Length: 362
Image (spheres, rainbow, N blue to C red):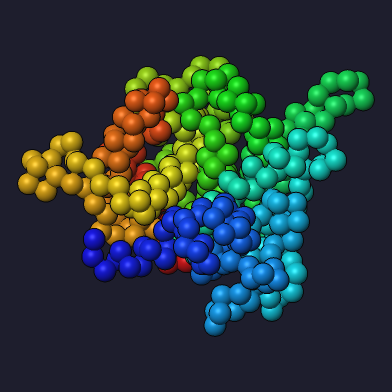
């Protein structure tokens, strides 16, 4: 690749221990080779190794403290030493965490936070607004992780994952892999992951900020439809009747057919899936043959940063061959397709709308 390769070595999903150069991962708390404790500095996208006294320093770039949630082995992010001990840029958006006295909740929370950090990686890369409750913003981005509760009569008050006015609620049972898979099968979904939940729900949040509050309702309705239609009635009809015939030509998922808000959130999530997965694929030098190429230039290699893609068309041209290859690898291992979705021209137009929101002036 060209000069962009030098930039990608810093910004992409491939990290190394600063002490011994062993490859480590975005979620790593320590190096398996030299045993040094590691922390991730989100605004420089670097892994920092602690010295023998446990102090995190990046030389001239500054000194760091671990996020306060590291005490529970929940978060590996760092904060600037100048701010004093506090929660990191990701964890400070939590308003409610699980009850850690309940067996299993610490593991569920750890799994949930790992997925949320992937979400925040993308939000930071795109410099999207992330106001906290402390900022005084009219609609801060806030998360609560809750569990079903038993009522006095013995019945269960269920928790539903969703978004409302900046508050994203997640059922902590989704942090249990077996339970999440059980729900995926019960709902007939081809794909259900924590990172998918986060990317979908934050799509609702950015609809509020980048569409509703930015004067883009007319453009939105032209592509996704009229969001003023009764939301509860639309969901009820979807669950009772299912998606319309030939829905896959117009919608990225069955659930996207239920209401324009859900169509937008699903499309937002998929735009993030594509950008982040392409970044990772390029980090590992994955190059695949374009199945519709005339072979004069058959290898698909990335020549741009997916988080700063020139256009949606560039993203899709790079993405489709990657999905074909990785789906084939999954089938060879007896696993479901990694990306069991089809991107039609109409869906690509919706992705282009998301692209323009993310990269346009704010």
